[in-house]
Length: 270
Ligand code: BTN
Image (cartoon, rainbow, N blue to C red; front, top):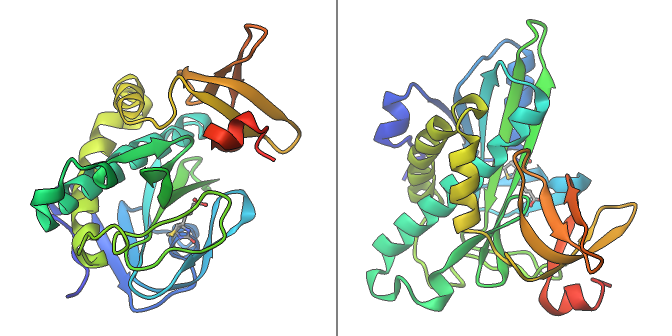
């Protein structure tokens, strides 16, 4: 089955470039933007050989997994563009829920079928990472911003030995292919990109994100690179920063870091 856009994505004017195999859909999307492509356009493959993850990590996507990137060229500041990642998390959670319910209606609502969003923008199934999102932005000559939102989902396989244990749809018993998930994702992206509305709708996106948040109100440790902040995950603020309430009563906003919940948080996320 070839990759195709969903009906909502098509009527919203999205276009699609699908690849049998490619190094990185994010790299391809940004290179097209540098060459004059103005989107909105999806780049998708089920085999990515040089995938990029957050914080300069590699993202392994063997054949059968879904690697997809959306290019949007928009007239917003980089800090507003960064909040688009939260819309992406909601879009992906929505698509995963829709296709899983369709694939195995009997098990919808059982514990392993619950998806949640881990700040800044991972999707978890239970406590395991199912998908990750990498947002990259670059200013263009006309002063607009090329924003590439890369979404990687473990459909058939998950990496082993990762800091947060990973899982795949196949391991969860959800019999869905990358193509079907992509079509649902392209539609839910069009929906929540519309809600985000160049950042004007971030209040609604923030509320929807918090409804799906993993670990809200629980102990957390966040490695920022320079330090580790420990406390209770309070909320995300109007800029999308994670707000951690520390033992001495401060509310510390964090703009980037690796998040550890539960035992890993209480142990200082060693
Ligand atoms: C993370 O580290 O959790 C983010 C992973 C993002 C991976 C996706 S796969 C599609 C797109 N192309 C890339 O090279 N990376 C992103």
